[in-house]
Each structure stands twice: as structure tokens, then as C-alpha cells.
Amino acid sequence: MGGRDLARAHEPDSVIRRFAVVPEGFPARLRADVSAGFTVSAMAVPEAFACSAIAGVSAMSGLYALVPALILHAIAGGSRQLVVGPTPGTAALSAAVAAVAATEGHRVAAVALLCGLAGLGAGLARLGFVTAAISPVVRHGFGAGLAVLIGVGQIPTLLGLHDVSGRPWERAWSTAARLDQLHWRTAVLGAGCLLLMMVLRRWCPLVPAALVAAVVGIAAVRLMVWESKGVAVANDIEAGLPRIGAPAGIAPGEYAVLAGPALAALAIGFAGGAAITGTLVAQGGDPVPANRELVGLGLANLGAALCSGMMVGPDAGHSRVLRDAGARGRLGGIVTAACAMLVLVGLIGMFEGLPTTVIAATAIVLAVRVAEPAELRRLCRMWRERRGSLYEDAVRADLAAASATAAAVLAFGVLPGLLTGIGISSVLLLRRAIRPAVTTGKPGGDGRFAGPSAARRQLLVLRVESCLYFANVDRWRQRVCRQCTAHTRVVVLDTEACPIIDTAAAQALGELSTALAWRGIGVRLARPALAIPDASRQAWSGGGPITVYPTVAAAVADVR
Image 1 (cartoon, rainbow, N blue to C red):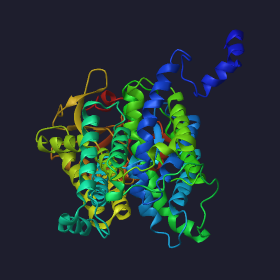
Image 2 (cartoon, rainbow, N blue to C red):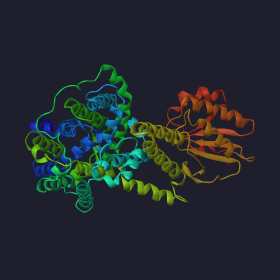
Image 3 (cartoon, rainbow, N blue to C red):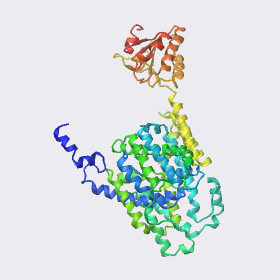
Image 4 (cartoon, helix red, strand yellow):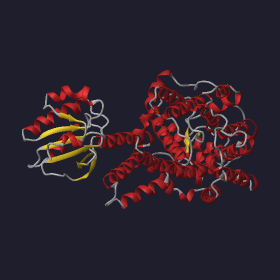
């Protein structure tokens, strides 16, 4: 770096850009980021009320969480275009985890606090890679089951039915049995706002559908005096700042009870955020460090918890709108937070008299977004077209995993369904990890692997295309033995594409050499990974030994 570059690095503007609070090219892109922030805030504020309804807490809890989450993530998060805030998924998870605690108090805020501490600690410990073990198909199945639960839970409020409780199928049955008792004004207003939001989201995605529905609902109730005719409105929407501090009314022992479920909720939320940031990167965004994103998500949850809010997570819909509206930096998220703060302290009165049926309709629309119908259709289409395709062997297991996760959510609830999904992901990961990739082929003229089929009946060349370790080495050894025929005299293992051979695999190589020697077959190793010669020769020597060659061509030179 030259002297001029060093001087520029200490300029105030360079420091601001280094921390990425202002997008590159400021102030040329200021208008785009500000307008995008206004657009997202118009969507996020009314949707925060719906998330509070899903979580079963005060309508203001979602808004209390939105402001600190946006600010802290904009400062510390990895993605410039990722919007963090209350989502239907985090709201349902918050309610499910909070129900584990026996004491009353701000349990939802306590869940956010634990998620924040866990996310911050995991990010600093560089454990962001762990959530990659959660399969996307399991997330899609969990989202589908969650969407059905949210919809079943909100339909009674949409129709004006009261005292509907129980498990999902009990709620559905009770709602169907009491359709003759619905409040027609409430049902008409809720269904009309639901249809309006669906139309706007389909054909005008940048229009804040939830805000339009809220305005229509409030206007209808006030102009036609429907509140006095039985249309329920939210009475807990009030101006003012939240209580700042740790969640009140939670016994210290309850945090230990909540810790495990909260960690699982954080894992599924961060895995969804990783998928969103991956999409943003693929569409031209900057690469996102997973550990920094985990730190940002942890701080966002900490801020939400200390402001009497609820658990927050990445919002795919808002992130997409922020990008489509032209935002290219973190300023869009900060503007969204500023607008939400303005509503909180001065403009909250515009939402007074918001009908609960409109909030329920908004929650149902958000639930459809959680289900990710496009991904579910893609998975089903892949299953129908699986025969003869590259993914024929995997798509059946993926569809079964998604279906089993969705069924677990519906049958047992949100938290058991989440734990079931994580368990299914672990089984899928283990099932595929213990299957080593081994290809049969022949050496080319340059000593490199050159394609399928063996060149001679006495020679068997096997290319190892995955790591060899304790979990898959037995299957690999059995596969090599099955490949040998009565005519095979030499087996050459091409390990150029094998990055790791652990000590268990090294011992298995020696045992394989001994077993094949009884059949008159020699084993040779070509192009081993760097860790093999020093770490594994002692293990091989007990079983053969196995001769190591620099190339496949050298290993088969005396066989020709």
C-alpha cells in the first residue's frame, strides 16, 4: 500500500465505508437506499402486529423488536441487503419455546435473549458452518407445517369466532362446526382484506399490501361504526417507548429450561437466513461471512430482548423488496428502523382501531410466504421427473424428509416438529456421508484418470472421490472387494481427489491389502493426499505393505 492509500485509509469517509454503514458510492445511491427503506418500513410495521398475534403477545412486542434488530444487524451483520425482524416463523417458535417455561413473565423476550446470547457465542466461536447440516428440504417441510398451524390458528379470529382452542385438528373441527356462528361483518372485512393483500402481493409486490389492508380495515370500522356492532379491534396499540432491561418475571432456573429449545430455534432461523443470503449473493450481492452473520443475528436478538421484544430472524420477503427497490447498502435497513421508531413514538395513533380480523388476515398471508410454495412445487416436480435423472436416488428421501417434518409439526406441535426435523436432517447427512464415491476407470497417457471401464482384465483402477474416514471406510472396503473379479491381479487406488484419509481408513487400507493378498491381488496407491505418507505408513505396514506411486501410470507400468 502506497503513501496515498495509507492517507486515504484514515479519512473519515473511508472509515465509514470500511464498516459498510453507508453503501459504496455514497451519496449517489442515497436516494435509492432511503426510498427502499421507506418501502420496507411500510410493510414491516403492520406485519409486526401480525407476528405479535402469532406469538400470542402484545401487539407492540413485534414493533419493539423491529427497531433494535434492524439497527444492530445493520452495524454488525454480514449481509448489506438482509432485513432482520419479527417473522411468522420466529413468532411461532417464540410461542412454542416460551410455553416450556412454567413461570409467567416476559417469556418471549427471554427466548430472544437466549437466542441472542447463543448466536453471539456461536459466531465468535466460528460455528457458523454447523447450520449447514440442516437440510433445505427439512426447512421447507417445517415451513409448510408451520404455515398450516398459523392458518388454522388465525382463521377463527378472521371469522369472528371466539373461544376456539386446542390442537390444530381440534381447532379446525371446532371452526368448521361453528361456521353458523361467525360474525358476518368481521368475516367479510377479514376475507376482503385477505384477498386484497394476495392480489397486491401477486401483481404489485412493491406495494405495502399489509399497510393498505390496515388502512382499509380501519377506515371501514370507523366510517361504518362497526366496532359498536361487534367487530373486534386491537386495544393494546399505544404510543411510547418500551421498557429497557432484562426480561422481567423469569426465574433464573427457567433460562436453563428454555436454553435447549431456544438453541434449536436459532439454528433453524439462521439456516433459513443462510439460504436467503445465498440467494442474494447469487443475484449479484457480496459474499457473506457466515460467522459474522451469526454475530449480527445474535446482537439483533439481544437488542430485541432488552427492548421487551420477541425473537427476530431474517425476512426473505423484506430482503427481496429492499433489493428490488434499489438498495445496495446498509443504509436501507437503518432508514427502515428510523421510520419504525417514528411510528413508535409519534405516529402509532394511525393504527388505533385496527381490526383483529385484518391482523389475522395479514398473519395468514405471511404464513403462505413461510410455506415457500415455489420450493415445494419444485421438490414435487423433481420427484415426478426423477426416473433417469441425476437426482433419482436422492429425491425420494428428500421428499420423504420434508413430508415427515411437516407431519410432525402438524401432529405434535411446533417444537417437537422442529426437533424431529433436525433429527431427520442428521439422518440424511449421515446416510449420505457414509457412502463413499468410488469410480472405476483406466489411466490416461498423462497419468491422470481418463474415464470409465477397466483397460485390462487383470487391472482394476478405482478413483476415490470423497474423504475416507471412520464412518464410510467399511462400505468403501466392501465395495472394493466386490469390484474385484477372478481375473483381477492388481488394484490401483487413485486418491488424487481424496482430501482426507484418517487413521481408521489407513488401518482399513492395510486390512484390505491383507484380505486381497489371500486372493492373489496386489494393492497399490497412486497420488495420495499430503497427509497420507507420514500419518498412515505405519498402519499400512501391518497389512501389506501398500506401495505408493506418484501417478496412476507409474502404478500400472509393470502390468502392461
